[in-house]
Length: 155
Image (cartoon, rainbow, N blue to C red; front, side, top):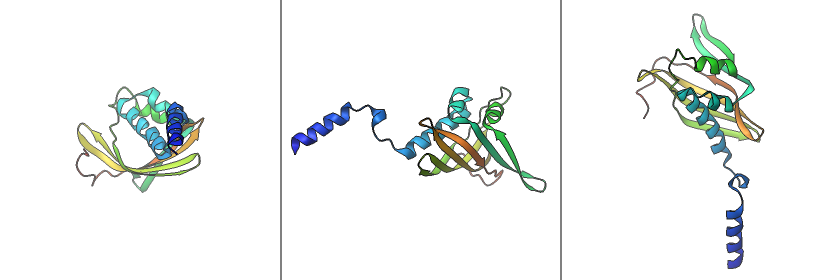
């Protein structure tokens, strides 16, 4: 029995990390967290690495007659989010709920947008991701918008 365990341990250490089983939920959250880090740092390469040519951003905002829906392509969202005339978007997220079925995943998270050291607004993001070419990419993001009741800055 002992030689078998030793041989198995040695064999596992020789297998490249990429070939070992990964944690799918961690992989999905890595994609979301890298995208959010790209927003905070206005890093175009990081943002573009986590979206697809088909990506859509659906923003639900208050309007005079109820909610209005704004839909942007991923490329247009990235252009708006990284305009040189505006500060990077500081939008920490927390309490993710991740669901995965094969190459499709959803992530539901709370967010809080901060500007000049104060909470601007908060709400929830719903990310829809697909594993494309072996990498998780955001295909759609829809968010809510709450201008009040957001609490203090999160740690």
